[in-house]
Length: 134
Image (cartoon, rainbow, N blue to C red; front, side, top):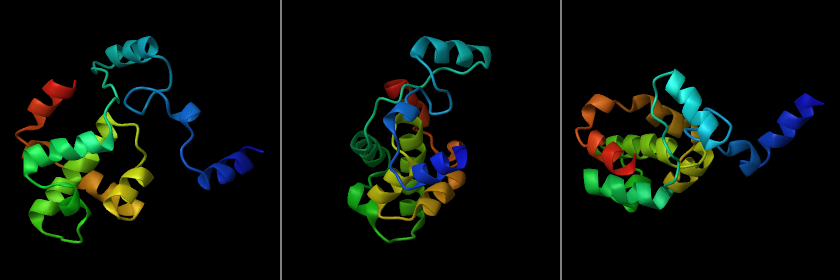
């Protein structure tokens, strides 16, 4: 029965009732999540941005907009901008990796690769983004 539930779910888009929460790792209301994160010394991150807002922020930081993020270019600047986009999207939006992949016109595996490739130390403007977005 559980196996069927999982297999059926793989064919569907993300269901909102299973995706609510903060930071995507905990399921519960804001107070519960804040309490759990406090125990682990983490500040709660509100997932209240849209992918379009993330695109605008990436453009402010990198100078590259949506068309460059979607381009097939493998240039270092484009790859770094895409990795920043993936990082911020996963951190500040409720978008799934599949939704992010679709926006970038990429395979979801590439989103995982870009996520792993992201290096916080390379982004001097990251603290500014965190201060602005929470």
